[in-house]
Image (tube, rainbow, N blue to C red; front, side, top):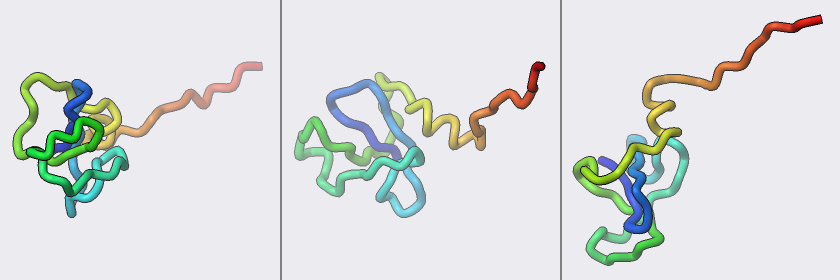
Length: 73
């Protein structure tokens, strides 16, 4: 399952249980047919014209932010 809003060009990956996205956003339980543009709504297929959320993509790949630990003196 995936989640998207009508107002933007991003889609999100859904956590098991379907209530939140992988990046932590809450998914509306209102059906997609309701046409509420501001609600993040569930969809069955990856929307062809939308791009995956960069945070969901990073979390899916298991990637965490990396920071340099080099100290220069």
